[in-house]
Amino acid sequence: MTPGGDTGRPGQPEGGDRQPSAGTWADDAPRPFLDRTLSPPPGGSDRPPTDPGGVRPYLLTGGRTTIRPDVNVETIVSVTGKSPTRQLDEEHLRLLRLAGEPLAVAELSAHLGIPIGVAMILVGDLAEAGVVRLNDASGDGSGEPTQDAALLRKVVNGVLKLREAESL
Amino acid sequence: MKVVIAGGFGVGKTTLVASISDIPPLTTEGHMTTVAAGVDDRTAVQAKTSTTVAMDFGRARLDGDIILYLFGTPGQDRFGFMWDNLVKGALGAIVLVDTRRIDDCYPAVDFFEHRQVPFIVGVNQFEGQELPPLDDVRWALDLGPTTPIVVVDARSRLSALDALLTLLMHNMSQLEARLAEIAPPPVPTRSRLIGPAPGWDRSPTGL
Ligand SMILES: Nc1nc2c(ncn2[C@@H]2O[C@H](COP(=O)(O)OP(=O)(O)O)[C@@H](O)[C@H]2O)c(=O)[nH]1
Ligand SMILES: [Mg+2]
Image 1 (cartoon, protein in one colour):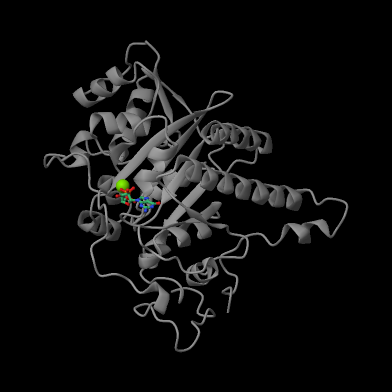
Image 2 (cartoon, chains in turn blue, orange):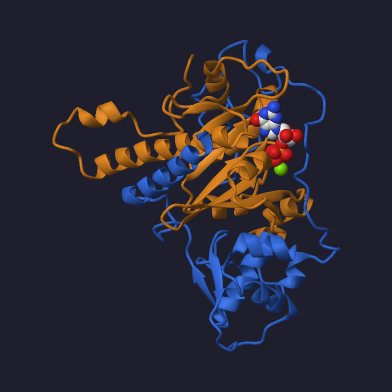
């Protein structure tokens, strides 16, 4: 399922039972208060931080495109100190050097200037080679929205504390 | 634990991540074209033609050794690979909206509703801008009655933390509703008080 599809909301592509209210609504006719400015968006900083230098990501991953299910953007990577059970490339070694301090995959990717998807594949290789340990940082470990009310409460309390410190 | 900050270009995602994060936001390249290329031919073509976008990353250490990870993403990623990974296990999402360019956030709203990821809408107020009534924003986004909408100043840590708390409380009430469904409490009217489970197939609101 692709997010959004090709049409905006309302007037969904699926579910034809959702009628836009007659005369007031069309994809290209926003409501008056939504009058869009024609000027370019402010900021516009969502550009890639690094130029991949023309190297296609698949070259970095040896043509592999599969991400292990236990590697996610916030998975914590730490070194095991074991010697690798498979051969590692230069990119692998760069990652490994950074992971001397446990870091999230997203952080490794940012520090090395490689796309996050590539970092996820390479980290999977490192885990397979036995040189890194992966820790699920997404709460209860299920990868699903947390069902753990106690854990959620802990997070709420933690954020409340930050808020208190800020409003003093 | 992670939270996703989504929204169109220039809406304040990086600013919001920075306001909450202990470290200056890191930027990483969000797309992974080769992954899409492995899926099927159609997505491969899409992947090649899609623009690369940056993803923000931040983290905040909370009491009790919990680290909250923050991911900012424009969410224009049609083939969905990175979105799937982002929402996997997420506590929820804050969708930032600039009411002058409100349709920028449709893909994000659609996606989170569809995937039943708890989310709230944060309306950013830019300099010299008068905000429309939040009910109008709710109507324009076709949001369900239980999805919170808040006004947020992404530059203010206090305001950003308030938005985060709104999301967490929303997640909590959804979780309670889910748990009540699994094990219905003895008083049958209770589940009605909690309200309907969020669904994307409900009729438009405010009409
Ligand atoms: N007035 C106001 N300006 C904001 C707010 N959030 C962000 N900005 C400004 O909007 C511009 C774009 O913000 P940025 O975080 O880079 O947007 P992004 O593209 O979504 O990451 C920056 O100049 C911010 O200072 C806000 O809540 N209020
Ligand atoms: Mg940004």
